[in-house]
Image (cartoon, rainbow, N blue to C red):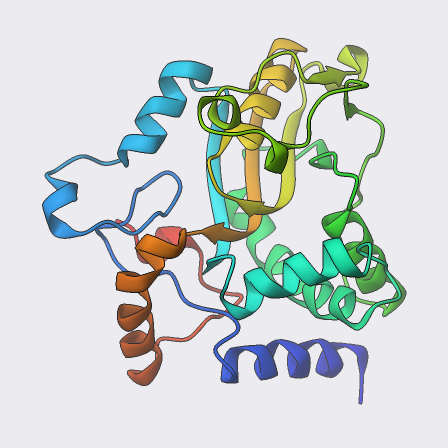
Length: 261
């Protein structure tokens, strides 16, 4: 089996077992792809959470593109927890191979679509003590699959800053004075920012604002999964199951813009 076939087989198995979900419909937030019930849509392009984040961080984040949906208790969300908390996000772990396959396949096909004119000058991963993105892409590269060139050391968390999961409420949304950026390296660059799981959006938006303040021309974020939260997940899941039954399954060719018009 070739490297390409091996990668496709891993992703195909994840799709078949409903580990990866499609994006669902035009009622989703056009920015973060959060599904919304019709009564909460009311003609607004973005969800209320994105409106709040824009009020805090401005428009530093050009776009937020989730590869798939999950909650913390669904298979992908639980897999991320195990990978980070029990297996230290090791590149040698089988889960690194699985996450690496999804990231590699999706990014390879989506980079031409999501990149600004001239392409991304820099690809960085959100700093993390449990480097899911870095180690999954390292494993993908070791398997011979395509990966973007990650540039490290551009942005780091300030010493003593709290991990996002240890923050609560407003402090998770309004992340202040947490990041340090090498201004000289990002000035004028179009940055692709990668992360594993987005819940409140505070990490991604605050990183984008910090990168923009340091001179980045634009920041586009791609995240492995959009965390729906348990409450939203309860009503979203039946819709996802219907979509899968009708043949609308995850595909590396499908971007959120294909379904959120």
